Image (cartoon, rainbow, N blue to C red):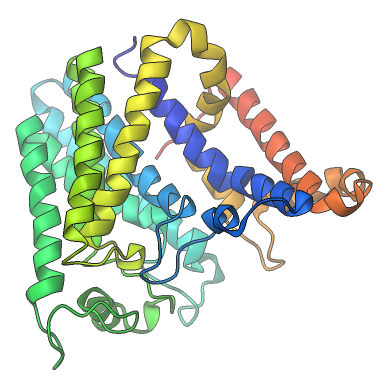
Length: 371
């Protein structure tokens, strides 16, 4: 098994991107067409309301952040090997460049950066910027610490964010409020971002502690896999994931699980599922990789070019369609229309298929978008 390219990490990233870039839409539209799915299943394709039950769709963003962290120990090991005695200096510039590019790309995707109109722009509002925050925090720790430092850093992020939300009063309000328009995280965003907010009840600045914790959860798991890939490691991952879920259930008595501001309870809950998914993928694709390589390959194709897939499907033009939808619509419109009531599902399926084939072509030619 390669120490720089782990099948399970690429495949899990690919599954996440598959859902985000159209797979979830295909499933939802097919279920709507058949009309046989109960409401609780259809709810899994929507974000939970404030304080509502966590859904599968709510896991897509934290899994993206978590997988970023899981790949970092392998990347930093490569930087150390190639950078010599001054590897930290060169890595710092690499990290700063990546954080800056992710931040700007996040503004391009959801912050209306391309409009060149400051009245329409939003500063912090996108998953790529959350990844940038978590990546920066985790990078600082990986530059100077090993596995124990990552564990301590993760716990500090979790405890600090929990304590700030629970015990710090603000602007004449009492501490410990968890209302959609009245909590410490949203208050800090209002003060620091002002008119550059996107108007949603999501927080980003103080919540960087949660993004850092999720990324560190990933890096801890990646460090364990890198140090010794074995059934014992898989057992450790299963134990960690189960423990995180149990801790979330205990903490929910004190702090509600709110995905919008990523309370510590939400981080423990989503992080626990992320760890369990990685454990399963690691067992299937790294330990039984030869027999299941064909199953992992379609996911690897997407996972190895995740950023490109995300940008193509998430950057929308003035017509409301994504770059990819606009590009392929003339090719598939007529064919999809022949499907009658199933036209929306057929259109979404063809969009996703053409995207995968394009990514397959790039994969075969080793052309990957990196920042």
